[in-house]
Image (cartoon, rainbow, N blue to C red):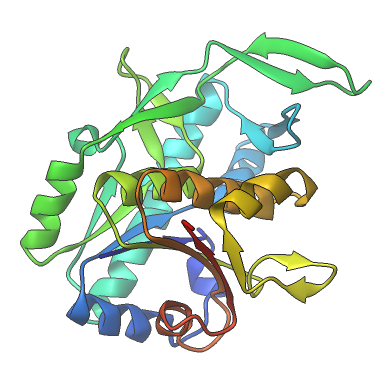
Length: 267
């Protein structure tokens, strides 16, 4: 089984061969798709006259600050427009996909972060209210396994449900890692717009878990979340994490064969 994380601007950013490639993999093993959509959320937030806000953690990880209104916009865009566009695209190509958010059947449960420690403009640490951002605590793996066993392909948007039943924004890469870990996927694949992890402009084709954790602080915005999520998936028992370019031909089957991608293994 493989869990695949795809970006939200899927239709524009992926190679035309991707859907046929997903179909090929679906015919051989279970596939779970988790999607993002930050760019689209930012666009709609601005169209609705609201200024999107981003914060940076002391560890250098950049994320969206989610107040209640943003959480509602996030849910609308992710679980509405983006999720259904992907499901329609898969259905059109003969993949019986089922679109879900993390709220449905409590697929993704998370704790609301009460406080966030961020770096302010002066480069000092500052505590702010946590807003509606979650730290994932639980995945409803039995439900996902049941859906897969019935021959469907789940497509999950990263909206989690809190203990107080709030909508929470969770990071898509880490949602994919948690899903992969809990359903016991053999592999987790992060499709992005570069060939994998680039260090000194060269592709790093293989990394051990220990090495990946060691170099994490040196990795730039965007990729650092994928490497972090990859390490989390491996720590939960996933055999390998792959980072590959969704703009290449047949990116999924070629990543599974370890062509032009970064492979992180638990060694």
